[in-house]
Length: 231
Length: 231
Image (cartoon, rainbow over all chains, first blue to last red; front, side, top):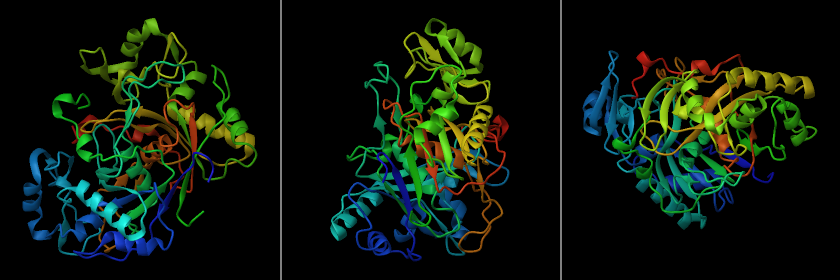
């Protein structure tokens, strides 16, 4: 690797999962011996996490599921989509309840607590292959002001979600006052680039990224409404 | 490279730039012979683009510059920051007028048209080393609902800003109805991961990303207000 380089490696070969499957075991089997390294960031899509956690409902109950998953409805479109705040504080379409890439007749809900999901995968990987990795659970969200969706982090384990430059000095020796980069979101988006939407790639390894090890939580990323100037 | 892998390479060795400098020439010199490949995405930070384009003002004129760069003020904080809509339609802090990593006594404004900036760099690279690359001009923006900033695209050349899955089929053969990934933003965020804020790295090469070649514009990413459900 070139100094400072980051590699993003799609994790191919993970079979279709079922409720109760051990994701870490499937990932370790898919990457093979020596496939994971200390310091790797493993980005796992929400959908595969929800499936193993049994967060699935019949499609007939989709509207009820969206209502149950929502703390607050922000908007309803004529086409029947809602933008709502989920139990976790995320603002997204249909409270994250989604029909794509799931078995016919079913919908998938967000994990109850994707930080815990991420921690479970991280601990199992440590146990299985003795590698100290970070884990991010990602999902595809729309956003204000800009068209299109990007993948962002809905759960993290083993890292802080931010690289906080506040109080550090810039190249001119001046203090950076506001900069706190949401690296967990950038890592989730970077991993999306190797996944596609129809290729069945449900995870990727980001190798070489400068992150801060720690016991961070995605709850730190969720903005308190009184603090939000961007809407 | 592993099949499907993406590499993100920081572009080190670019000297401090001045108005009128030829960025493409500096980048080509910094990467050396064979350093750029057809299909690479070159992500360049806004700040270095603005500097070569002379988009600089005295710090004493910062407030006047913010006012001049803003079509509309959304909010003012007690601390004196504004969130506004820029001439380009971007929603960001201080209309993108920024003091960090610029010479003492000055502020840097956003490029007048960063699509044009990107196209100029792309054309010059083609001329200098006969490589067909895409170029993204990136900047660090806050966002609604989530703390922290991420790098996003404010100018593109040689690619479409989206990977549009609408009308394609998922792994279950079902039509994807809403998915249009803002890959230009994900690429900008991915490149930020190798840059840091105080390392003087002003560009990165993303190699191996699946993008759609085309004559896209960041104007396609800017959401029309009537169409924006996320705020």
